[in-house]
Image (cartoon, rainbow, N blue to C red; front, side, top):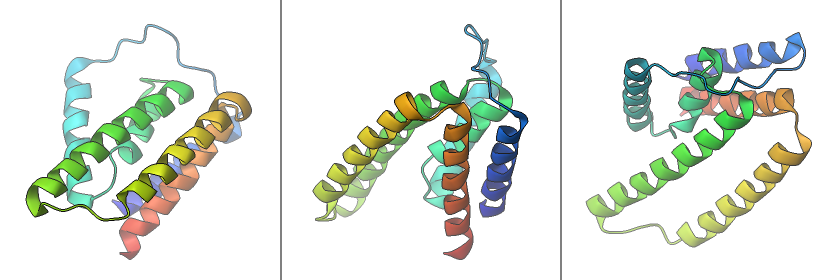
Length: 147
């Protein structure tokens, strides 16, 4: 999976070299069966690797053309939030305990989300957001390969 994420990062970075990316057209029809199947595969991969599903969802949405850069960013953030809550609930159900640092992590995540939202909506163009995602994909890919 690490190699797949590194390849996705490479492709994403390469896509920024061809000039500005246009936003996806409104009213894109996403095929239901491939979308549901993709969601199932992403959920399986996330569970097997212990990696947030957004790391797989973002490249999928961008490479299939199902969403533009900004909508992908928003969808991935929501997807990651729901997966994180489900993961915490599953952990709590199995061990009846949560780490003491959860409030600190929550504050850090909220601050990161606020900063990221400001950068994404006010400062980064589409290519800047794609490059930032490519960096995140490299980090996730290396983490999967080295741990």
